[in-house]
Length: 237
Length: 111
Image 1 (cartoon, chains in turn orange, blue):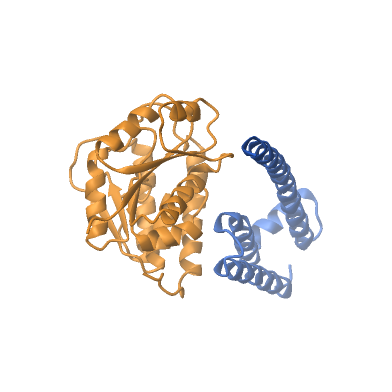
Image 2: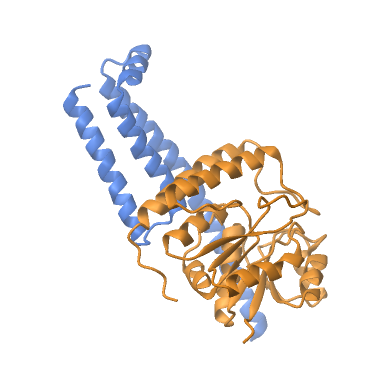
């Protein structure tokens, strides 16, 4: 009984590499949908010209809103598993299968981690790694669960996670908060080792001084999530 | 600052905190939007427990009562918040207007 898998490709102004990213996913044999997050460049035209399956959001919602739209798409069309795969070329399509297998074996949220074992590949700048270690620590303190790469957008969700995230997904920098949310709602979260590449094009949405503000805000948001979800009943399977 | 004032401050801050956590639990408020108020309430509690800094700054500014300085601070913070919200609402209105018009134009093409 094969599970139906959907690869969600959120994209904001990725006109240079979106076609290449989609081709890599298609060559790996998966259904996909590109979520065009109100791009102001030619991402949308390029997708339509290449007959790519794209959902054009009329306004920019940010990565949180775009990914949530992808979860809603997966839910609407009855997919069993959805995989978030960034449209900037950082994720490696060869690892989609590992994430899907983790979900098949019972995980609700399988997170592709750059920091398990001694894999090669791009592991981000030192500053970012400090931030990531901090978030790992915060999540461990507040939920008891160790997640080695909480900012990783390369992740697979089971039906339970899709259902949770379709109605409940953080908007600003959602990756760490959504992990804490999943743990607090009783979902099974698992790390899977992957390799990531450097950005092919475009620019990161987290930059310089904003990083400090982001760290404080995300830490607070995770704390609030954990406090307010303490008594929440488990998500229906 | 009298001890009673400080207790009232702590009490008010904790009530604010509880109110917002309740709203979040009932999914009537997004966590990202509540961060400001959580920090605000927390700072009021800190001020009430450690009135030292307040006394220092109020005498520096020539304000007679530290309690008055707290009022000034809170009013200042609320005004800044008000400005920020006005800007956010303005942007939301533009976005909504653009979205409504595009939607109407798109449906016009279909029919």
